[in-house]
Length: 93
Image 1 (cartoon, helix red, strand yellow):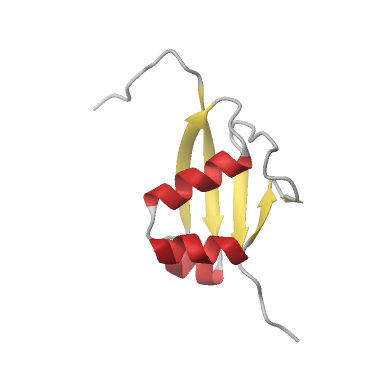
Image 2 (cartoon, rainbow, N blue to C red):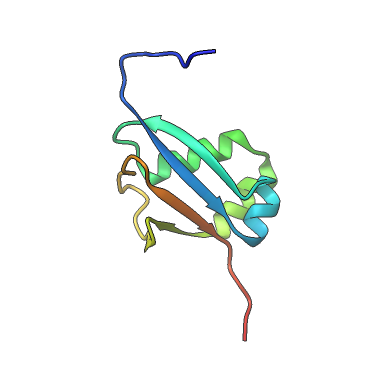
């Protein structure tokens, strides 16, 4: 089946989940297609919509790296081909 074309340019982003985020997502990675110009916040909304409430709760505690740079402002645009790492808090010592 071919993707539906709406005349809107889309971008593809790889999302990698770690630790508790991986467990909640049920996968190590996923590919997300978004409209061009989409933000990290919109990407996160898309992920929440595709998963259950437990996954959404885990996302609240996570930090994010977009192409290996910490995301402090989720209104930043996601470039085509970007990688978003979803990192839950880690305990260590």
